[in-house]
Image 1 (cartoon, rainbow, N blue to C red):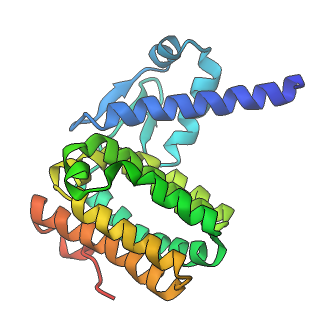
Image 2 (cartoon, one colour):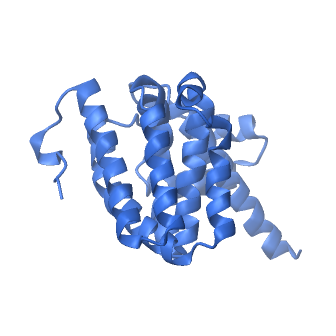
Length: 230
């Protein structure tokens, strides 16, 4: 690897490390907190330059805001942020499921089923919410990959901080593990049957069900950001 490629690799690695670190912090905060570039560099064992570059990139995602002379301000994900993400996610998930159905091989279908193999019974998903949450993320990421659309993958990845911050809330606290498992398996069945219309419909319904559960737990959000039922 030449120096230029090594530099790119290092920058990418630092970006991923900074993003993951801030995601973890963000999932535990309810008020904005200051994040110092120097502290991040020390914690990650890297120089400040790639950390600074990572923070600039992360500002464009909405995860942080940069204040001249004051460093970065890490904002918690608000309910409104999450509802707006769900609105967009319904469209992305539906499209991805349709495209995945057209592209997936039988081996791909088996791979999707393998993700949920440890949760053969619904009660297992409920009792192992943290593990199921990880499987949930892996499943949706794989659907995005099977859609074989690089722009879709980039858009999906850019909202990783929103998903991560609310993962525990939407899986364990909303007690949706069993329902989520059933919905995921139905989507896989539709993909295996090569029924793109059904896969898209089920994927969209899956996101709407999550939205309903979220509303029931946290109260009705502002009408201006409620879901349209299509």
